Length: 407
Picture 1 (cartoon, helix red, strand yellow):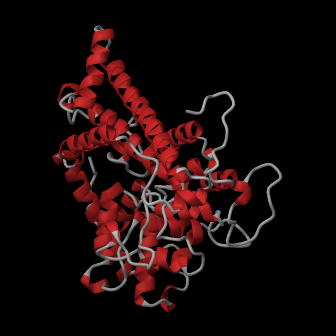
Picture 2 (cartoon, helix red, strand yellow):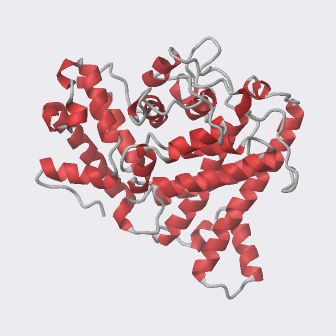
């Protein structure tokens, strides 16, 4: 394991000095490497700021202490940097992939994504494709952000775009056949279209830094959803001790701090979950990397499987935590009622702007009449996907007599 003093860059780490570059050539920065520059561009983007008011699990006005997409993203970034540092990988690339991984989420979390996906795949819009938040994130950073005089999008490096698209693994076989979660419907059109401009090699494994971002997302989800679920009284600490991994941690805390107050007890559980998962990933990944004998970042991409992973025991614990949370939190009647109402808000807005495109803001309605039906549907989806929870409800109230409070 790399030590704090004298950390060395692994030979298989991504190197900003040998990046495959940007689609649009730019002068080098005298003060920042290319991956650090990508981080800064994400942080200063409009889409990143909007994450502060987008749902993680609980909508924004249910409480100030629940996670939003932004606080979740920052937690993922912290974990990703910790893992990258320990494994000798590029911290900036790991961080930018963590910062960008949720940019494409619409308002109201997965409920908003489900509503847009169903709407875009509805019978009246057949053939226009659905909605995928990873594909939307790619659209944001390559097109929809309009900040620079010389190009649309953020003009990020190839390594950042590649990791953004396939941090969860390859999307196709070497001959281009979609597999995994894209096997049924194919790779989202936005991704395949962009790959005609700049090949992101959808068939290969992602970089080790991208794999780190994916594991950091899992770790953050497990830890903060336990915290938020307890805060919302959806279950008790006693309930979740039924998961052996959590039960063991709670037992340790009880033995050492028998009089610890409930709030600190929960925090102690959460921080130990994060610590143990990070330490497990480091040990397991070092073992896999040694077995692979990788000598370059290309060796990681050409490997038969991912190398940044939980151990089998921790993967089992991760699955058990998610299995506990799914019915008690994500499918809890209180959460589902709010999310059902949120889906209806998205459907209503899409139907309204389809019928009345002149109600779109000027920058979105400009040239709308010249678009074909598919492009019109996609533009409306882009507009709605960029909304915060609050803005979506404000817009809904402008056009409809009854807007749910989502409480």
